[in-house]
Structure formats: structure tokens, C-alpha cells
Length: 128
Length: 128
DNA sequence: TATATAATTCAACGTATATTGAACTACTTC
DNA sequence: GAAGTAGTTCAATATACGTTGAATTATATA
Image (spheres, protein in one colour):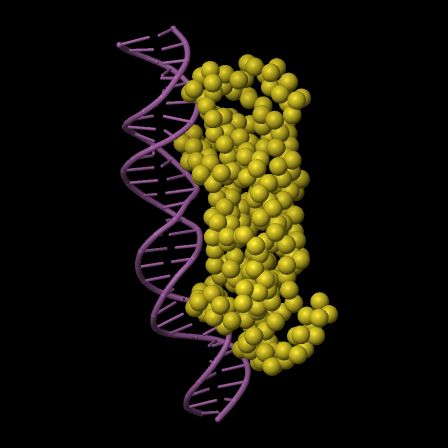
């Protein structure tokens, strides 16, 4: 009886993604990238963070598929970060799907004192 | 120059919420609660978790405002958990607002070799 | 070739937190 | 009142991870 399970949502993967996004500085970096900022140095200036710390956070974001990284064609010392649009779209779709309040079903106690009052629960369910 | 900041989104608070949700077992608990399950014991049976561990995770969810807790009226030993619909609605709204791909603006390098090509970038921006 | 620069990698540290078992609280039932 | 039950709290442990400074890599310039 798999009841109301969502199709194709691996909660371990979702948890991993959310963990990546649960870091304030990473959210700040994402916010800057969405504004069009792109290189390590400017992020460092705007957020007052050391380059290696930014590298660390961007690496986490990149490995999660949220951020793309590419080097400048004319001067390969510079690296440009950008948001992975597709990944972001998939993310909010998965997130919104799992946490959608519409999924919440009426209570159905299978133990405790309320268990014997199942009939009442059923009425409750019918009434929504 | 606050550029493209979202209105009324505190990234620290959002990060804190996502951290709460970045735990696989907590997502499993939320999933069960959405299915109508409600008491500690059944969650323990379904997820094979010890009662104290469930208490811990539910406490985190409760303190984040995601889960409601109430005791049985006739037998106060039993406690019923439920999802806070309103909190969930606000959550997906905030999440979807912040990570919405529509927010992604064209790159605008303020440093690096591309910086001198600002005119090109402006054209890019105009072309969207 | 030597120096400078942008970014990454590495090692070390401190903190936060999931997990576990035991003790405890509140309540019910016998 | 004694025993049992549902759940919580506590103390201890282990692990994960953000942060820092130093070392390293790769590239460009003088």
C-alpha cells in the first residue's frame, strides 16, 4: 500500500540538494549570479569573502549541478560562473511538487485512541 | 546599488528553513504526515526509527513551524503531528520566488578581460 | 626567465548536528 | 498506589562541514 507516494522523487537526492542550498553564503552567491555577476573576484568584493572560500562554495554548487563554470577564452586565469537554468527549473518543480499543500491528506490514525474512531475520521475526510 | 534584490526574502531565514528540510529522515517524516499519518509510534513502525529520534526530528520541524503538535484529548499520552499547511504554502512561494529562472539576468562582467567589452554586454542585455 | 595574477587545493581547526542508550515526565490502567 | 505506556529530555559520541591560512597550479606579462 504505497498510498500517496510522489512519482520519481528520490528524497535522498532532494535532501542532498537542499543541503547544498541551506548555506547562507551560497544563497548570496546564487543571488549575485542571478544578477549577472560572474567572476570570483567580484563575488569576493561584494560579499567580503576570501577567494578560496568562494571557490569552495562554488565547487559545492557546481557538483550539485546548480552552477556552471567556464574559463575566459582570451585569459584563462579568469573563470566565469553562471546559473544552470535547467537545473533551477527542475529544482523548483521537484520542490514545489513534494511540498505542495494539495498533497496533504486528512488524518488517518492507525494507532492511539483515535484508531477506534475510524468512522469519525472517515467522515472528517469526506468533509475535507 | 541593490540591483535586482528580491523583496522581503531574508536569505538567512530561507537557508535555515532549507537546512531543516535537508535531512532525509525529516523528508520521510513529512511525507508520512502528508499521507495522513500522525503519531510517533506509527512513524516509528513505518520508518524503523526509535521514538526519541523521531521526537528529535519532529521537534526541529516544529520549531521551524512546519509541523504542528497536539495531544490527544482523551488520552494525553498520545501526540498527533500534522503538517502546517500555511507554512508549507509560504515556503514553496518563497522558494519558487527566489530560485525562479526568470530572475536570471544576462551576464554583466564588472572585472576581468570581458570588462572592457561592456558595450557588447549592454547589447546582450538589450537583446535579453 | 622571472614576476605577477586568478583561482584552486591542502591541512588544520572548531562547531553543529545526527544518532544512541538511559533516565525522566506525564498520563492511564489495574 | 503500583505498574505500564507514549513520548521527551539528557549526556555522550561520531561525523560532516564551514572557515582559515598557506601552498600550489595555471596562465599572462615584463
